Length: 192
Image: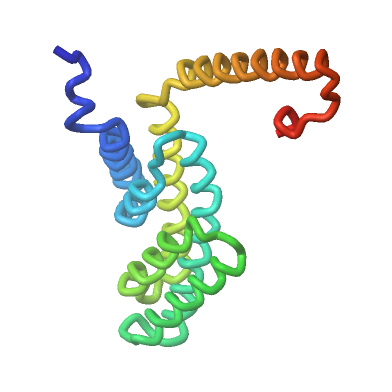
């Protein structure tokens, strides 16, 4: 029987997402912060590899800052009960994230912006900075869990790629030597 049967039921990414969500909520609650924004960030940041998590996190954090800032600005201008606050926060978050090439963070930033509007009330600065902190906690936790827990096994993949490359190089070398012996000094096939 396969000793890794659980991988067929619950994949590594699912386990990592659950653990990262738990740790993110725990850290936020210990700091007396609302964990929902950090958890949203964590869930969408978990990727198959740590590198992918960090790469996307690099785009998601500034995008989240933009979304939070716009939510605060439009809530200040129009109030937390105004459809304009939601609409303008959404539109400008998408617009700015697109213009700044932060596509990987646009969804998280937009969700952050619209979700934080009802809770801002008069605490504009506190809400802005608490969202930044919770987004940072979510991104950091996701990256650490992805890096430490069940990391992908690259050794076998690299070993296989090296063997394939070596085989292709020997074949190319052998073919090219045969062509040169037959006075074929130019070869489109070898150039490719």
